[in-house]
Length: 354
Image 1 (cartoon, helix red, strand yellow):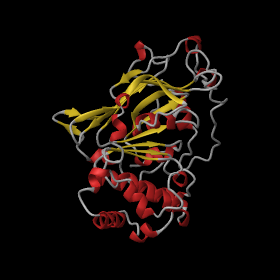
Image 2 (image 1 turned 180 degrees about the horizontal axis):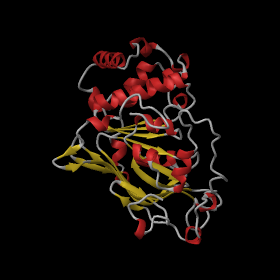
Image 3 (image 1 turned 90 degrees about the horizontal axis):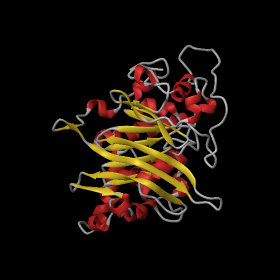
């Protein structure tokens, strides 16, 4: 598929998978009016504000936005890493437990019970997660739930891990290595292998290609795509790199200052963005054959300690009205499968683009 921004080297997996079961789309993750904050000596800092959407089975869902908009905090809430000073103020996250027919909510602590087996997490900095003084073999063994360990011997488990590494085009000899002996790209591949070894239904990846050169980035993206097709699971990819989202995601949500301001199919967001913020993000991307200078988004994101009233993007938006500066827009479906939070999308123009 070609487009004026990028060329997809491989199509998102969900486009070739049947994600409808008995005529219904399976909702793998449901985020229900979630709000979170961080406790500080000056009072709470609200980072996630009334986020409400669903992630479907067998899709790669992307979350994009500028640094500091709340992407990583949202991912932590999905994985139930809710620890002080982070606080959940309202709402909940529900993970559909397809392996045993149960649903899991962070409110009961059940999501943590399914770590690695049903949901796994690829953190932003691999070097801060892998233990530098423990061989990778032991770190793989430590990640396996106790119930799984009882079903086979240690040697059988190591053999399965070695076979899995070979499937991912990684050498089994890596099991003898220590993390400090590996390059950044190789450590990232090992973390992805760790997170997917138990074939979880959901994989959360936070900036999986950050600080890697473009050649290594491509290898990581192809690895994630190959795993998604192989496991037929749900992946959530957090990245500020719009090119990453265009290459591999099926749908994506655009975050700004703690809120989702637009959500829809990736190709639709790139071809016809609805929200002014998304329009400016996409407009700043380089186009094939276009040598004209690109305009950045003026101003800076608002401080979360003292956000402006109304739409938080209004101070930077060239289309902002008085209503935008005074009233918070409602996040709603503006056309089938597309959601946005913008006053310019009024009832008379619903279903049309700004």
